[in-house]
Image 1 (cartoon, rainbow, N blue to C red):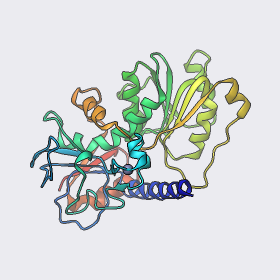
Image 2 (cartoon, helix red, strand yellow):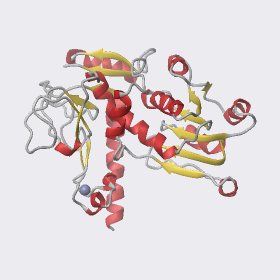
Image 3 (cartoon, protein in one colour):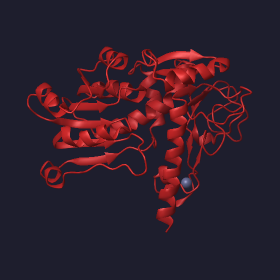
Image 4 (cartoon, rainbow, N blue to C red):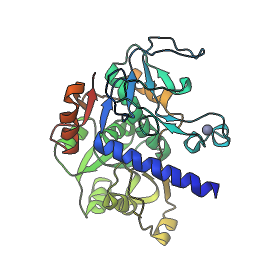
Amino acid sequence: MQQRGLSAYLAELIGTFLLVFFIVSVVVLFVATGNQAQFGSDFAVVGLGKIAGTYGLKEGDRVAVCPIQSCGACDSCRAGRPNFCANLSVLGVTTNGGFAELAKSKAAHAYKLPDTLSDEQGAFVEMLAAAVNAVRKAEVEPDDFAVVYGPGPVGLSMVQLLKNEGARVAIVGTGGYRLDVAKALGADFVFEAGDDLAARVQEANGGRLADRVIVATGSMAANQQALEISGPGSTVIFMGVTGPEDAVQVPMLTSLIQDKTIRFSLWYPFQWPRTIGILAHNELDTGPIITHSASLDGIGAAIERVVNREEGVLKTVIKP
Ligand SMILES: [Zn+2]
Protein backbone atom coordinates (compact mmCIF):
# COMPACT_ATOMS: atom_id res chain seq x y z
CA MET A 1 0.00 0.00 0.00
CA GLN A 2 2.71 2.39 0.99
CA GLN A 3 4.60 1.64 -2.22
CA ARG A 4 1.54 2.43 -4.36
CA GLY A 5 1.01 5.67 -2.46
CA LEU A 6 4.58 6.70 -3.07
CA SER A 7 4.34 5.88 -6.78
CA ALA A 8 1.20 7.95 -7.12
CA TYR A 9 2.90 10.82 -5.33
CA LEU A 10 5.90 10.63 -7.64
CA ALA A 11 3.65 10.48 -10.71
CA GLU A 12 1.88 13.60 -9.50
CA LEU A 13 5.18 15.35 -8.93
CA ILE A 14 6.47 14.38 -12.34
CA GLY A 15 3.28 15.64 -13.94
CA THR A 16 3.65 18.94 -12.18
CA PHE A 17 7.26 19.14 -13.27
CA LEU A 18 6.16 18.62 -16.85
CA LEU A 19 3.79 21.53 -16.50
CA VAL A 20 6.49 23.74 -15.04
CA PHE A 21 8.98 22.91 -17.73
CA PHE A 22 6.37 23.25 -20.46
CA ILE A 23 5.39 26.68 -19.27
CA VAL A 24 8.86 27.87 -18.66
CA SER A 25 11.88 25.88 -19.77
CA VAL A 26 13.41 28.99 -18.46
CA VAL A 27 16.13 29.36 -15.92
CA VAL A 28 15.18 31.57 -13.05
CA LEU A 29 18.05 33.34 -11.51
CA PHE A 30 17.02 34.74 -8.20
CA VAL A 31 14.31 35.04 -5.68
CA ALA A 32 14.06 38.61 -4.42
CA THR A 33 11.69 39.76 -7.08
CA GLY A 34 8.27 40.83 -5.91
CA ASN A 35 6.70 38.31 -8.27
CA GLN A 36 4.03 36.29 -6.50
CA ALA A 37 4.14 33.15 -8.63
CA GLN A 38 5.89 30.21 -7.03
CA PHE A 39 7.15 28.34 -10.09
CA GLY A 40 10.78 28.15 -11.04
CA SER A 41 12.72 25.06 -10.10
CA ASP A 42 16.07 26.02 -11.67
CA PHE A 43 17.57 28.87 -9.79
CA ALA A 44 20.71 30.29 -8.34
CA VAL A 45 20.67 32.62 -5.41
CA VAL A 46 22.89 35.65 -5.51
CA GLY A 47 23.37 36.71 -1.95
CA LEU A 48 22.12 34.04 0.40
CA GLY A 49 19.93 35.28 3.22
CA LYS A 50 19.66 34.17 6.81
CA ILE A 51 21.22 30.80 7.60
CA ALA A 52 20.37 28.80 10.67
CA GLY A 53 23.36 26.77 11.79
CA THR A 54 26.83 26.26 10.33
CA TYR A 55 27.08 24.48 7.02
CA GLY A 56 30.08 26.05 5.33
CA LEU A 57 27.83 28.83 4.10
CA LYS A 58 27.59 32.42 5.15
CA GLU A 59 25.22 35.25 4.48
CA GLY A 60 25.86 36.71 1.04
CA ASP A 61 27.23 33.51 -0.50
CA ARG A 62 26.11 32.62 -3.98
CA VAL A 63 24.54 29.17 -4.05
CA ALA A 64 22.78 26.87 -6.48
CA VAL A 65 19.68 25.41 -4.88
CA CYS A 66 18.64 21.82 -5.52
CA PRO A 67 14.85 21.97 -5.69
CA ILE A 68 14.39 18.28 -4.84
CA GLN A 69 14.66 18.59 -1.09
CA SER A 70 14.81 15.26 0.68
CA CYS A 71 14.63 15.16 4.47
CA GLY A 72 17.77 13.14 5.17
CA ALA A 73 16.06 11.28 8.00
CA CYS A 74 13.43 8.91 6.58
CA ASP A 75 14.15 5.25 5.77
CA SER A 76 14.75 5.99 2.06
CA CYS A 77 17.10 8.88 2.76
CA ARG A 78 19.03 6.84 5.33
CA ALA A 79 19.34 4.07 2.76
CA GLY A 80 20.89 6.50 0.24
CA ARG A 81 17.80 6.84 -1.94
CA PRO A 82 16.74 10.49 -1.53
CA ASN A 83 14.57 10.39 -4.68
CA PHE A 84 12.09 8.31 -2.70
CA CYS A 85 12.10 10.45 0.41
CA ALA A 86 8.89 10.11 2.38
CA ASN A 87 8.98 13.82 3.24
CA LEU A 88 10.02 15.23 -0.10
CA SER A 89 9.45 18.90 -0.82
CA VAL A 90 10.12 20.34 -4.26
CA LEU A 91 10.86 24.03 -4.64
CA GLY A 92 8.73 25.50 -7.39
CA VAL A 93 6.20 22.69 -7.04
CA THR A 94 5.21 21.94 -3.45
CA THR A 95 6.72 25.14 -2.05
CA ASN A 96 7.98 28.47 -3.33
CA GLY A 97 10.54 28.39 -6.12
CA GLY A 98 12.52 30.93 -8.07
CA PHE A 99 9.54 33.00 -9.18
CA ALA A 100 8.55 33.79 -5.62
CA GLU A 101 9.67 36.84 -3.74
CA LEU A 102 11.24 34.60 -1.11
CA ALA A 103 11.99 30.89 -1.13
CA LYS A 104 13.30 28.74 1.68
CA SER A 105 15.84 25.96 1.14
CA LYS A 106 17.27 23.38 3.48
CA ALA A 107 20.96 24.16 3.99
CA ALA A 108 21.85 20.66 2.81
CA HIS A 109 20.43 21.46 -0.63
CA ALA A 110 22.18 24.81 -1.12
CA TYR A 111 25.53 24.37 -2.88
CA LYS A 112 28.05 27.18 -2.73
CA LEU A 113 29.17 28.35 -6.17
CA PRO A 114 32.87 28.88 -6.91
CA ASP A 115 33.76 32.47 -7.77
CA THR A 116 34.71 31.38 -11.27
CA LEU A 117 31.15 30.45 -12.13
CA SER A 118 28.84 33.11 -13.51
CA ASP A 119 25.37 33.60 -12.08
CA GLU A 120 23.98 32.19 -15.31
CA GLN A 121 26.04 29.03 -14.86
CA GLY A 122 24.78 28.81 -11.29
CA ALA A 123 21.25 28.73 -12.62
CA PHE A 124 22.30 26.07 -15.14
CA VAL A 125 23.38 23.55 -12.50
CA GLU A 126 19.93 22.05 -11.91
CA MET A 127 19.37 21.14 -15.52
CA LEU A 128 22.94 20.00 -16.07
CA ALA A 129 22.78 17.74 -13.04
CA ALA A 130 19.94 15.82 -14.71
CA ALA A 131 22.13 15.34 -17.78
CA VAL A 132 25.08 14.26 -15.62
CA ASN A 133 22.93 11.70 -13.81
CA ALA A 134 21.70 10.15 -17.07
CA VAL A 135 25.17 9.97 -18.60
CA ARG A 136 26.58 8.35 -15.46
CA LYS A 137 23.83 5.74 -15.59
CA ALA A 138 24.75 4.98 -19.20
CA GLU A 139 28.23 3.83 -18.02
CA VAL A 140 29.86 4.89 -21.26
CA GLU A 141 33.11 3.31 -22.42
CA PRO A 142 35.58 5.09 -24.70
CA ASP A 143 34.69 4.72 -28.38
CA ASP A 144 31.10 3.70 -27.61
CA PHE A 145 28.63 4.90 -30.21
CA ALA A 146 26.15 6.94 -28.18
CA VAL A 147 22.91 8.38 -29.49
CA VAL A 148 21.03 11.20 -27.76
CA TYR A 149 17.42 11.94 -28.61
CA GLY A 150 16.37 15.54 -28.06
CA PRO A 151 18.67 18.49 -28.87
CA GLY A 152 17.29 20.70 -26.11
CA PRO A 153 19.50 22.14 -23.36
CA VAL A 154 19.71 18.74 -21.62
CA GLY A 155 20.53 16.85 -24.81
CA LEU A 156 23.09 19.44 -25.90
CA SER A 157 24.75 19.18 -22.50
CA MET A 158 24.85 15.41 -22.81
CA VAL A 159 26.58 15.65 -26.17
CA GLN A 160 29.46 17.37 -24.41
CA LEU A 161 29.44 15.04 -21.39
CA LEU A 162 29.51 11.97 -23.66
CA LYS A 163 32.34 13.42 -25.74
CA ASN A 164 34.24 13.98 -22.49
CA GLU A 165 33.83 10.24 -21.82
CA GLY A 166 35.42 9.44 -25.16
CA ALA A 167 32.26 8.33 -26.93
CA ARG A 168 31.34 8.92 -30.53
CA VAL A 169 28.14 10.90 -30.29
CA ALA A 170 25.11 11.24 -32.51
CA ILE A 171 22.11 13.42 -31.73
CA VAL A 172 18.61 13.06 -33.11
CA GLY A 173 16.16 15.91 -33.53
CA THR A 174 13.77 17.59 -35.86
CA GLY A 175 16.42 19.64 -37.57
CA GLY A 176 17.19 23.31 -37.71
CA TYR A 177 19.10 25.47 -35.33
CA ARG A 178 19.36 22.99 -32.47
CA LEU A 179 21.13 20.37 -34.54
CA ASP A 180 23.54 23.03 -35.78
CA VAL A 181 24.36 23.87 -32.17
CA ALA A 182 24.86 20.16 -31.44
CA LYS A 183 27.36 19.95 -34.26
CA ALA A 184 29.18 23.03 -33.00
CA LEU A 185 29.33 21.49 -29.50
CA GLY A 186 31.05 18.37 -30.80
CA ALA A 187 28.39 15.93 -32.00
CA ASP A 188 29.98 13.59 -34.54
CA PHE A 189 26.66 12.95 -36.28
CA VAL A 190 23.37 14.83 -36.36
CA PHE A 191 20.36 12.89 -37.51
CA GLU A 192 16.97 14.22 -38.52
CA ALA A 193 14.32 12.13 -36.78
CA GLY A 194 12.88 9.49 -39.08
CA ASP A 195 11.86 5.87 -39.45
CA ASP A 196 15.13 4.71 -40.98
CA LEU A 197 17.34 5.73 -38.08
CA ALA A 198 18.58 2.21 -37.30
CA ALA A 199 20.00 1.98 -40.82
CA ARG A 200 21.62 5.40 -40.51
CA VAL A 201 23.20 4.45 -37.17
CA GLN A 202 24.56 1.25 -38.70
CA GLU A 203 25.93 3.20 -41.62
CA ALA A 204 27.70 5.61 -39.27
CA ASN A 205 28.90 2.87 -36.90
CA GLY A 206 30.53 0.30 -39.18
CA GLY A 207 27.38 -1.79 -39.54
CA ARG A 208 26.60 -1.96 -35.83
CA LEU A 209 23.70 -0.52 -33.86
CA ALA A 210 24.24 1.96 -31.02
CA ASP A 211 26.05 1.03 -27.80
CA ARG A 212 24.33 3.66 -25.67
CA VAL A 213 21.08 5.54 -26.23
CA ILE A 214 19.75 8.31 -24.00
CA VAL A 215 16.26 9.64 -24.64
CA ALA A 216 15.90 13.21 -23.39
CA THR A 217 12.43 13.75 -24.80
CA GLY A 218 8.90 12.63 -23.99
CA SER A 219 8.26 11.77 -27.64
CA MET A 220 6.97 8.22 -27.64
CA ALA A 221 8.23 7.67 -31.17
CA ALA A 222 11.73 8.44 -29.90
CA ASN A 223 11.36 6.31 -26.78
CA GLN A 224 10.18 3.33 -28.82
CA GLN A 225 12.81 3.79 -31.49
CA ALA A 226 15.58 3.87 -28.88
CA LEU A 227 14.97 0.15 -28.35
CA GLU A 228 15.28 -0.47 -32.08
CA ILE A 229 18.53 1.38 -32.72
CA SER A 230 20.39 -0.10 -29.72
CA GLY A 231 22.41 -3.26 -30.27
CA PRO A 232 24.19 -6.08 -28.44
CA GLY A 233 25.43 -5.15 -24.98
CA SER A 234 23.78 -1.77 -25.19
CA THR A 235 22.29 0.39 -22.47
CA VAL A 236 19.19 2.52 -23.06
CA ILE A 237 18.37 5.35 -20.66
CA PHE A 238 14.90 6.85 -20.54
CA MET A 239 14.67 10.27 -18.92
CA GLY A 240 11.95 12.14 -20.84
CA VAL A 241 8.68 12.90 -19.10
CA THR A 242 5.81 11.10 -20.82
CA GLY A 243 2.09 10.74 -20.18
CA PRO A 244 0.89 8.34 -17.48
CA GLU A 245 -0.57 5.94 -20.06
CA ASP A 246 2.36 6.02 -22.48
CA ALA A 247 4.19 2.73 -22.98
CA VAL A 248 6.92 1.21 -25.11
CA GLN A 249 7.01 -2.34 -26.40
CA VAL A 250 10.13 -4.26 -25.49
CA PRO A 251 10.97 -7.05 -27.95
CA MET A 252 11.70 -9.72 -25.38
CA LEU A 253 13.74 -12.31 -27.25
CA THR A 254 15.84 -9.77 -29.15
CA SER A 255 16.55 -7.84 -25.96
CA LEU A 256 17.54 -11.06 -24.17
CA ILE A 257 19.85 -12.14 -26.96
CA GLN A 258 21.38 -8.66 -27.01
CA ASP A 259 21.72 -8.69 -23.21
CA LYS A 260 20.32 -5.18 -23.31
CA THR A 261 20.14 -2.94 -20.23
CA ILE A 262 17.18 -0.59 -19.90
CA ARG A 263 17.35 2.05 -17.20
CA PHE A 264 15.53 5.20 -16.16
CA SER A 265 17.11 8.39 -14.87
CA LEU A 266 15.07 10.40 -12.36
CA TRP A 267 16.43 13.75 -11.22
CA TYR A 268 20.01 13.88 -9.95
CA PRO A 269 20.67 12.26 -6.57
CA PHE A 270 24.14 13.19 -5.27
CA GLN A 271 25.20 14.77 -8.59
CA TRP A 272 25.35 18.44 -7.62
CA PRO A 273 28.96 18.69 -6.40
CA ARG A 274 30.12 16.79 -9.48
CA THR A 275 28.04 19.03 -11.74
CA ILE A 276 29.39 22.23 -10.21
CA GLY A 277 32.88 20.77 -10.61
CA ILE A 278 32.29 20.13 -14.31
CA LEU A 279 31.38 23.78 -14.80
CA ALA A 280 34.20 25.03 -12.59
CA HIS A 281 36.73 23.07 -14.65
CA ASN A 282 35.34 24.33 -17.96
CA GLU A 283 34.46 20.84 -19.10
CA LEU A 284 31.22 22.02 -20.61
CA ASP A 285 30.38 25.08 -22.69
CA THR A 286 27.13 26.73 -21.59
CA GLY A 287 27.61 29.67 -23.97
CA PRO A 288 25.70 28.28 -26.98
CA ILE A 289 22.95 26.82 -24.74
CA ILE A 290 22.09 29.86 -22.58
CA THR A 291 20.92 31.89 -25.55
CA HIS A 292 18.80 34.60 -23.94
CA SER A 293 18.29 36.61 -20.82
CA ALA A 294 15.25 38.63 -19.84
CA SER A 295 14.14 40.94 -17.07
CA LEU A 296 11.08 40.19 -14.99
CA ASP A 297 9.13 42.61 -17.17
CA GLY A 298 10.10 40.54 -20.19
CA ILE A 299 9.28 37.17 -18.71
CA GLY A 300 6.02 36.75 -20.63
CA ALA A 301 7.68 37.25 -23.98
CA ALA A 302 10.55 34.99 -22.89
CA ILE A 303 8.16 32.17 -22.05
CA GLU A 304 6.36 32.61 -25.37
CA ARG A 305 9.66 32.34 -27.23
CA VAL A 306 10.38 29.03 -25.51
CA VAL A 307 6.88 27.59 -25.88
CA ASN A 308 6.80 28.53 -29.56
CA ARG A 309 10.26 27.00 -30.01
CA GLU A 310 11.44 30.08 -31.83
CA GLU A 311 14.54 29.68 -33.93
CA GLY A 312 17.68 30.44 -31.97
CA VAL A 313 16.08 30.08 -28.53
CA LEU A 314 17.33 27.44 -26.12
CA LYS A 315 17.73 28.46 -22.49
CA THR A 316 16.66 31.83 -21.12
CA VAL A 317 17.89 33.29 -17.86
CA ILE A 318 15.56 35.62 -15.99
CA LYS A 319 17.44 38.40 -14.24
CA PRO A 320 15.32 40.38 -11.82
ZN1 LIG B 1 13.69 11.50 3.46
